[in-house]
Image 1: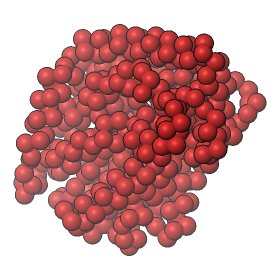
Image 2 (image 1 turned 120 degrees about the vertical axis):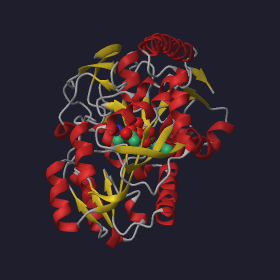
Image 3 (image 1 turned 90 degrees about the vertical axis):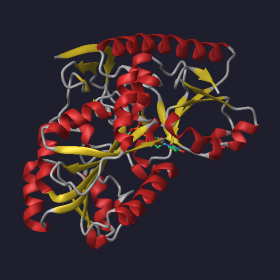
Length: 392
Ligand code: JHZ
Protein backbone atom coordinates (compact mmCIF):
# COMPACT_ATOMS: atom_id res chain seq x y z
CA UNK A 1 0.00 0.00 0.00
CA UNK A 2 1.23 3.51 -0.93
CA UNK A 3 0.99 5.91 2.02
CA UNK A 4 1.55 9.67 1.56
CA UNK A 5 3.87 11.08 4.18
CA UNK A 6 4.99 14.45 2.83
CA UNK A 7 3.26 17.25 0.95
CA UNK A 8 5.68 19.65 -0.77
CA UNK A 9 2.90 21.92 -2.01
CA UNK A 10 2.30 23.21 -5.52
CA UNK A 11 5.34 22.74 -7.75
CA UNK A 12 6.03 23.45 -11.45
CA UNK A 13 8.00 21.13 -13.74
CA UNK A 14 11.52 21.41 -12.35
CA UNK A 15 13.35 21.74 -15.67
CA UNK A 16 10.89 23.97 -17.52
CA UNK A 17 12.54 27.39 -17.29
CA UNK A 18 10.16 30.13 -18.52
CA UNK A 19 11.36 33.21 -20.41
CA UNK A 20 11.13 36.57 -18.66
CA UNK A 21 7.56 37.85 -18.72
CA UNK A 22 5.95 34.45 -19.54
CA UNK A 23 2.48 33.76 -18.25
CA UNK A 24 2.10 31.87 -14.97
CA UNK A 25 3.43 28.33 -15.07
CA UNK A 26 1.19 25.36 -14.33
CA UNK A 27 1.85 23.79 -10.92
CA UNK A 28 1.07 20.36 -9.53
CA UNK A 29 0.73 19.16 -5.97
CA UNK A 30 3.90 17.25 -5.09
CA UNK A 31 3.25 14.52 -2.53
CA UNK A 32 5.66 11.77 -1.51
CA UNK A 33 4.59 8.20 -0.72
CA UNK A 34 6.05 5.14 0.96
CA UNK A 35 5.02 1.70 -0.22
CA UNK A 36 4.71 -0.45 2.90
CA UNK A 37 5.04 -3.66 0.87
CA UNK A 38 8.05 -3.16 -1.42
CA UNK A 39 9.51 -0.17 0.56
CA UNK A 40 9.69 2.01 -2.54
CA UNK A 41 9.52 5.79 -2.01
CA UNK A 42 7.94 7.68 -4.92
CA UNK A 43 6.01 10.81 -5.85
CA UNK A 44 2.24 10.47 -6.23
CA UNK A 45 1.57 12.53 -9.36
CA UNK A 46 3.56 11.41 -12.36
CA UNK A 47 4.08 13.43 -15.49
CA UNK A 48 4.41 11.91 -18.93
CA UNK A 49 8.06 11.46 -19.98
CA UNK A 50 7.43 13.55 -23.12
CA UNK A 51 6.40 16.50 -20.94
CA UNK A 52 9.59 16.39 -18.90
CA UNK A 53 12.22 15.13 -21.32
CA UNK A 54 12.07 16.64 -24.77
CA UNK A 55 14.06 18.70 -27.25
CA UNK A 56 14.17 21.64 -24.82
CA UNK A 57 15.71 19.85 -21.86
CA UNK A 58 18.26 22.26 -20.34
CA UNK A 59 20.20 20.15 -17.80
CA UNK A 60 23.76 19.28 -18.87
CA UNK A 61 25.76 16.68 -16.93
CA UNK A 62 29.03 18.26 -18.06
CA UNK A 63 28.38 21.54 -16.25
CA UNK A 64 30.30 20.49 -13.15
CA UNK A 65 33.88 19.37 -12.84
CA UNK A 66 32.88 16.99 -10.04
CA UNK A 67 30.54 15.05 -12.34
CA UNK A 68 32.93 15.12 -15.30
CA UNK A 69 35.70 13.72 -13.08
CA UNK A 70 33.38 11.10 -11.61
CA UNK A 71 32.35 9.86 -15.09
CA UNK A 72 35.94 9.88 -16.31
CA UNK A 73 37.06 7.75 -13.38
CA UNK A 74 34.12 5.39 -13.81
CA UNK A 75 34.85 4.86 -17.50
CA UNK A 76 38.42 3.81 -16.60
CA UNK A 77 37.12 1.51 -13.86
CA UNK A 78 34.61 -0.09 -16.22
CA UNK A 79 37.34 -0.96 -18.72
CA UNK A 80 39.67 -2.28 -16.04
CA UNK A 81 37.13 -4.34 -14.15
CA UNK A 82 34.75 -5.59 -16.87
CA UNK A 83 36.34 -4.74 -20.23
CA UNK A 84 33.02 -4.88 -22.13
CA UNK A 85 32.86 -5.27 -25.89
CA UNK A 86 29.76 -3.14 -26.00
CA UNK A 87 28.44 -0.66 -23.43
CA UNK A 88 25.05 1.02 -23.50
CA UNK A 89 24.21 4.11 -21.50
CA UNK A 90 20.56 4.87 -20.77
CA UNK A 91 20.26 8.65 -20.39
CA UNK A 92 23.59 9.68 -21.92
CA UNK A 93 22.72 13.40 -21.63
CA UNK A 94 25.50 15.49 -23.26
CA UNK A 95 27.96 12.59 -23.21
CA UNK A 96 29.74 13.19 -19.90
CA UNK A 97 30.34 9.43 -19.63
CA UNK A 98 30.26 8.02 -23.16
CA UNK A 99 32.73 10.48 -24.61
CA UNK A 100 35.38 8.85 -22.38
CA UNK A 101 34.81 5.49 -24.11
CA UNK A 102 35.73 4.08 -27.51
CA UNK A 103 33.17 5.30 -30.08
CA UNK A 104 32.95 1.84 -31.62
CA UNK A 105 32.12 0.19 -28.30
CA UNK A 106 29.42 2.40 -26.82
CA UNK A 107 25.82 3.36 -27.56
CA UNK A 108 23.97 6.25 -25.98
CA UNK A 109 20.23 6.46 -25.38
CA UNK A 110 19.04 10.02 -24.87
CA UNK A 111 15.42 11.01 -25.57
CA UNK A 112 16.16 14.76 -25.31
CA UNK A 113 17.11 15.36 -28.92
CA UNK A 114 18.95 18.63 -28.16
CA UNK A 115 21.34 16.64 -25.94
CA UNK A 116 21.53 13.58 -28.19
CA UNK A 117 22.60 15.93 -31.01
CA UNK A 118 25.74 16.83 -29.01
CA UNK A 119 27.06 13.26 -28.88
CA UNK A 120 25.85 12.44 -32.40
CA UNK A 121 27.87 15.38 -33.67
CA UNK A 122 30.95 13.94 -31.97
CA UNK A 123 30.39 10.64 -33.80
CA UNK A 124 28.89 8.58 -30.97
CA UNK A 125 25.95 6.30 -31.83
CA UNK A 126 23.06 7.92 -29.99
CA UNK A 127 19.39 6.96 -30.14
CA UNK A 128 17.13 9.89 -29.26
CA UNK A 129 14.40 7.59 -27.95
CA UNK A 130 12.80 6.73 -24.61
CA UNK A 131 13.95 3.62 -22.86
CA UNK A 132 11.31 0.88 -23.32
CA UNK A 133 10.87 -2.69 -24.49
CA UNK A 134 10.39 -1.77 -28.16
CA UNK A 135 13.74 0.02 -28.15
CA UNK A 136 15.42 -2.91 -26.37
CA UNK A 137 14.12 -5.25 -29.09
CA UNK A 138 15.34 -2.93 -31.84
CA UNK A 139 18.78 -2.65 -30.23
CA UNK A 140 19.16 -6.40 -29.75
CA UNK A 141 18.32 -7.00 -33.38
CA UNK A 142 20.83 -4.42 -34.56
CA UNK A 143 23.69 -4.77 -32.06
CA UNK A 144 23.10 -8.12 -30.32
CA UNK A 145 23.10 -8.58 -26.54
CA UNK A 146 24.93 -5.90 -24.53
CA UNK A 147 27.79 -6.67 -22.10
CA UNK A 148 27.39 -3.65 -19.88
CA UNK A 149 24.47 -1.32 -19.34
CA UNK A 150 25.03 1.86 -17.35
CA UNK A 151 22.56 4.46 -16.20
CA UNK A 152 23.05 7.43 -13.87
CA UNK A 153 20.16 9.51 -12.58
CA UNK A 154 17.80 8.21 -15.22
CA UNK A 155 15.99 4.97 -14.27
CA UNK A 156 14.42 6.71 -11.24
CA UNK A 157 12.95 9.19 -13.73
CA UNK A 158 10.87 6.52 -15.51
CA UNK A 159 7.48 5.65 -14.03
CA UNK A 160 7.13 2.05 -15.26
CA UNK A 161 9.95 0.22 -13.45
CA UNK A 162 8.63 -3.14 -14.65
CA UNK A 163 9.22 -2.15 -18.24
CA UNK A 164 12.58 -0.56 -17.36
CA UNK A 165 14.03 -3.74 -15.84
CA UNK A 166 12.27 -6.15 -18.19
CA UNK A 167 13.90 -4.31 -21.11
CA UNK A 168 17.32 -4.28 -19.45
CA UNK A 169 17.08 -7.96 -18.59
CA UNK A 170 16.13 -8.76 -22.18
CA UNK A 171 19.01 -6.81 -23.73
CA UNK A 172 21.75 -7.68 -21.26
CA UNK A 173 24.09 -10.56 -22.03
CA UNK A 174 23.63 -13.55 -19.70
CA UNK A 175 26.92 -12.67 -17.99
CA UNK A 176 26.35 -8.97 -18.50
CA UNK A 177 26.63 -6.23 -15.88
CA UNK A 178 24.16 -3.51 -15.07
CA UNK A 179 25.50 -0.44 -13.22
CA UNK A 180 23.09 2.17 -12.00
CA UNK A 181 23.66 5.20 -9.84
CA UNK A 182 21.17 7.46 -8.17
CA UNK A 183 20.78 9.59 -5.04
CA UNK A 184 20.64 7.44 -1.92
CA UNK A 185 17.40 7.54 0.04
CA UNK A 186 19.34 6.98 3.26
CA UNK A 187 21.46 10.09 2.65
CA UNK A 188 18.43 12.07 1.53
CA UNK A 189 16.48 11.32 4.73
CA UNK A 190 19.52 11.60 7.03
CA UNK A 191 20.44 15.02 5.60
CA UNK A 192 16.90 16.31 5.35
CA UNK A 193 17.53 16.85 1.64
CA UNK A 194 13.84 17.02 0.74
CA UNK A 195 14.78 18.83 -2.46
CA UNK A 196 15.72 15.44 -3.95
CA UNK A 197 11.96 15.23 -4.56
CA UNK A 198 10.61 16.93 -7.67
CA UNK A 199 8.55 15.83 -10.63
CA UNK A 200 11.50 14.15 -12.43
CA UNK A 201 12.54 12.12 -9.42
CA UNK A 202 9.63 9.71 -9.53
CA UNK A 203 11.58 7.42 -7.22
CA UNK A 204 14.40 7.88 -4.74
CA UNK A 205 15.85 4.41 -4.28
CA UNK A 206 17.08 2.71 -1.17
CA UNK A 207 19.19 -0.42 -1.68
CA UNK A 208 16.39 -2.34 0.07
CA UNK A 209 13.73 -1.09 -2.34
CA UNK A 210 15.94 -1.77 -5.36
CA UNK A 211 16.58 -5.32 -4.14
CA UNK A 212 12.81 -5.86 -3.94
CA UNK A 213 12.30 -4.52 -7.47
CA UNK A 214 15.15 -6.64 -8.93
CA UNK A 215 13.90 -9.83 -7.30
CA UNK A 216 11.10 -10.04 -9.89
CA UNK A 217 13.68 -10.07 -12.68
CA UNK A 218 16.03 -12.60 -11.11
CA UNK A 219 18.72 -10.01 -10.72
CA UNK A 220 21.04 -9.39 -7.75
CA UNK A 221 23.02 -6.42 -6.50
CA UNK A 222 26.57 -7.79 -6.11
CA UNK A 223 28.52 -4.65 -5.24
CA UNK A 224 27.85 -1.17 -3.96
CA UNK A 225 29.82 2.07 -3.93
CA UNK A 226 28.73 4.97 -1.78
CA UNK A 227 29.48 8.16 -3.70
CA UNK A 228 29.58 11.80 -2.61
CA UNK A 229 28.01 12.99 -5.87
CA UNK A 230 24.58 14.63 -5.88
CA UNK A 231 24.57 14.90 -2.10
CA UNK A 232 25.18 11.17 -1.56
CA UNK A 233 24.50 8.61 -4.25
CA UNK A 234 24.86 4.86 -4.52
CA UNK A 235 26.38 3.07 -7.46
CA UNK A 236 24.84 -0.40 -7.70
CA UNK A 237 26.53 -3.24 -9.58
CA UNK A 238 23.94 -5.79 -10.68
CA UNK A 239 24.10 -9.22 -12.33
CA UNK A 240 21.69 -11.90 -13.42
CA UNK A 241 21.07 -14.49 -10.71
CA UNK A 242 22.14 -17.29 -13.07
CA UNK A 243 25.65 -15.81 -13.26
CA UNK A 244 27.39 -17.67 -10.41
CA UNK A 245 30.89 -16.57 -11.39
CA UNK A 246 30.49 -13.24 -9.65
CA UNK A 247 30.43 -13.28 -5.86
CA UNK A 248 28.30 -10.93 -3.83
CA UNK A 249 30.39 -8.50 -1.78
CA UNK A 250 29.78 -8.03 1.96
CA UNK A 251 29.27 -4.33 1.32
CA UNK A 252 25.83 -5.12 -0.08
CA UNK A 253 24.60 -6.76 3.12
CA UNK A 254 26.20 -3.92 5.10
CA UNK A 255 24.16 -1.37 3.16
CA UNK A 256 20.92 -3.33 3.71
CA UNK A 257 21.72 -3.51 7.42
CA UNK A 258 22.50 0.21 7.69
CA UNK A 259 19.25 1.08 5.95
CA UNK A 260 17.24 -1.25 8.18
CA UNK A 261 18.94 0.12 11.30
CA UNK A 262 18.02 3.65 10.24
CA UNK A 263 14.41 2.54 9.76
CA UNK A 264 13.98 2.82 5.99
CA UNK A 265 11.51 -0.06 6.12
CA UNK A 266 9.27 1.75 8.61
CA UNK A 267 6.60 4.34 7.91
CA UNK A 268 7.38 6.10 11.20
CA UNK A 269 10.82 7.12 9.81
CA UNK A 270 9.18 8.96 6.92
CA UNK A 271 6.64 10.64 9.19
CA UNK A 272 9.51 11.95 11.30
CA UNK A 273 11.28 13.13 8.15
CA UNK A 274 8.14 15.08 7.16
CA UNK A 275 8.25 16.90 10.52
CA UNK A 276 11.94 17.69 10.02
CA UNK A 277 11.16 19.13 6.58
CA UNK A 278 8.58 21.52 8.07
CA UNK A 279 11.04 22.70 10.68
CA UNK A 280 13.79 23.08 8.04
CA UNK A 281 11.49 25.39 6.05
CA UNK A 282 10.87 27.62 9.09
CA UNK A 283 14.56 27.84 9.93
CA UNK A 284 15.61 28.65 6.37
CA UNK A 285 13.01 31.42 6.09
CA UNK A 286 14.19 32.87 9.40
CA UNK A 287 17.79 32.99 8.20
CA UNK A 288 16.81 34.68 4.93
CA UNK A 289 14.57 37.19 6.74
CA UNK A 290 17.36 38.16 9.14
CA UNK A 291 19.79 38.74 6.25
CA UNK A 292 17.26 40.91 4.43
CA UNK A 293 16.57 42.94 7.60
CA UNK A 294 20.23 43.95 7.46
CA UNK A 295 19.74 45.08 3.84
CA UNK A 296 22.22 42.54 2.50
CA UNK A 297 21.91 40.92 -0.91
CA UNK A 298 21.23 37.21 -1.41
CA UNK A 299 21.86 35.54 -4.76
CA UNK A 300 21.18 31.91 -5.68
CA UNK A 301 24.14 29.87 -6.99
CA UNK A 302 23.10 27.00 -9.29
CA UNK A 303 19.53 27.15 -10.62
CA UNK A 304 19.00 23.48 -9.85
CA UNK A 305 15.90 21.32 -10.05
CA UNK A 306 16.40 20.95 -6.29
CA UNK A 307 16.21 24.73 -5.80
CA UNK A 308 12.84 24.68 -7.56
CA UNK A 309 11.48 22.38 -4.85
CA UNK A 310 12.90 24.49 -2.01
CA UNK A 311 11.82 27.87 -3.33
CA UNK A 312 8.30 26.75 -4.23
CA UNK A 313 7.79 24.82 -0.99
CA UNK A 314 9.18 27.62 1.22
CA UNK A 315 7.53 30.32 -0.92
CA UNK A 316 10.82 32.13 -1.40
CA UNK A 317 10.53 34.88 -4.02
CA UNK A 318 12.34 37.97 -5.25
CA UNK A 319 11.91 39.61 -1.84
CA UNK A 320 14.57 37.21 -0.59
CA UNK A 321 16.69 36.20 -3.56
CA UNK A 322 17.67 38.90 -6.06
CA UNK A 323 18.56 36.50 -8.88
CA UNK A 324 20.27 33.17 -9.58
CA UNK A 325 23.61 32.60 -11.30
CA UNK A 326 24.15 29.53 -13.45
CA UNK A 327 26.67 28.36 -16.03
CA UNK A 328 24.11 26.39 -18.12
CA UNK A 329 23.40 28.30 -21.36
CA UNK A 330 19.78 27.08 -21.62
CA UNK A 331 18.91 28.28 -18.11
CA UNK A 332 20.35 31.78 -18.50
CA UNK A 333 17.97 34.70 -19.03
CA UNK A 334 15.08 32.56 -17.91
CA UNK A 335 13.10 32.43 -14.65
CA UNK A 336 13.56 29.88 -11.91
CA UNK A 337 10.45 27.66 -12.40
CA UNK A 338 7.43 28.69 -10.31
CA UNK A 339 9.07 31.92 -9.11
CA UNK A 340 9.68 35.40 -10.47
CA UNK A 341 13.43 35.13 -9.89
CA UNK A 342 15.71 35.68 -12.88
CA UNK A 343 18.63 33.42 -13.77
CA UNK A 344 21.66 35.24 -15.07
CA UNK A 345 24.85 34.07 -16.68
CA UNK A 346 27.50 33.36 -14.07
CA UNK A 347 30.42 35.78 -13.96
CA UNK A 348 33.17 36.67 -11.47
CA UNK A 349 32.21 40.31 -11.84
CA UNK A 350 28.68 39.66 -10.55
CA UNK A 351 30.12 37.71 -7.62
CA UNK A 352 32.00 40.79 -6.44
CA UNK A 353 28.73 42.60 -5.64
CA UNK A 354 27.06 39.85 -3.59
CA UNK A 355 26.89 39.53 0.24
CA UNK A 356 25.24 36.11 0.61
CA UNK A 357 24.98 33.12 -1.71
CA UNK A 358 22.10 30.68 -1.40
CA UNK A 359 23.53 27.32 -2.47
CA UNK A 360 21.03 25.93 -4.98
CA UNK A 361 23.78 23.49 -5.98
CA UNK A 362 24.73 22.54 -2.39
CA UNK A 363 25.77 19.13 -3.73
CA UNK A 364 28.73 20.84 -5.42
CA UNK A 365 29.65 23.01 -2.44
CA UNK A 366 33.31 21.93 -2.33
CA UNK A 367 33.76 22.61 -6.04
CA UNK A 368 32.06 25.99 -5.54
CA UNK A 369 34.11 26.92 -2.43
CA UNK A 370 37.26 26.20 -4.39
CA UNK A 371 36.11 28.37 -7.28
CA UNK A 372 34.87 31.23 -5.10
CA UNK A 373 37.92 31.86 -2.93
CA UNK A 374 37.86 35.57 -3.80
CA UNK A 375 34.21 35.86 -2.66
CA UNK A 376 35.03 34.05 0.59
CA UNK A 377 38.14 36.15 1.27
CA UNK A 378 36.09 39.29 0.79
CA UNK A 379 33.76 38.14 3.59
CA UNK A 380 31.03 36.66 1.38
CA UNK A 381 28.94 33.94 3.06
CA UNK A 382 26.98 30.92 1.92
CA UNK A 383 23.51 29.86 3.06
CA UNK A 384 22.47 26.23 2.81
CA UNK A 385 19.59 24.13 4.07
CA UNK A 386 21.49 20.79 4.08
CA UNK A 387 21.82 19.04 6.51
CA UNK A 388 20.16 21.93 8.36
CA UNK A 389 19.59 25.57 7.49
CA UNK A 390 22.62 27.63 8.38
CA UNK A 391 25.11 30.26 7.26
CA UNK A 392 28.39 28.58 6.42
P1 JHZ B 1 22.67 19.64 -10.34
C1 JHZ B 1 19.39 17.57 -12.36
O1 JHZ B 1 19.13 18.05 -11.04
C2 JHZ B 1 18.16 16.98 -12.94
P2 JHZ B 1 19.74 19.40 -10.50
C3 JHZ B 1 18.09 15.49 -12.98
N1 JHZ B 1 16.73 15.13 -12.75
C4 JHZ B 1 18.93 14.81 -11.97
O2 JHZ B 1 18.64 13.73 -11.55
C5 JHZ B 1 20.19 15.46 -11.53
O3 JHZ B 1 20.44 16.62 -12.27
C6 JHZ B 1 21.36 14.56 -11.71
C7 JHZ B 1 24.99 24.86 -12.07
N2 JHZ B 1 26.36 25.12 -11.62
O4 JHZ B 1 23.66 18.82 -11.02
C8 JHZ B 1 24.88 23.88 -13.21
C9 JHZ B 1 26.90 26.39 -11.73
O5 JHZ B 1 26.22 27.31 -12.23
O6 JHZ B 1 22.83 19.81 -8.89
C10 JHZ B 1 23.51 23.28 -12.99
O7 JHZ B 1 22.51 24.10 -13.53
N3 JHZ B 1 28.18 26.60 -11.31
C11 JHZ B 1 18.52 15.00 -14.31
O8 JHZ B 1 19.38 20.51 -11.41
C12 JHZ B 1 23.36 23.30 -11.46
O9 JHZ B 1 24.26 24.28 -10.99
C13 JHZ B 1 28.96 25.63 -10.75
O10 JHZ B 1 30.09 25.88 -10.37
O11 JHZ B 1 19.33 19.53 -9.08
C14 JHZ B 1 23.71 21.97 -10.83
O12 JHZ B 1 22.67 21.10 -11.01
C15 JHZ B 1 28.37 24.32 -10.60
C16 JHZ B 1 29.18 23.22 -9.97
C17 JHZ B 1 27.10 24.11 -11.06
O13 JHZ B 1 21.29 19.03 -10.68
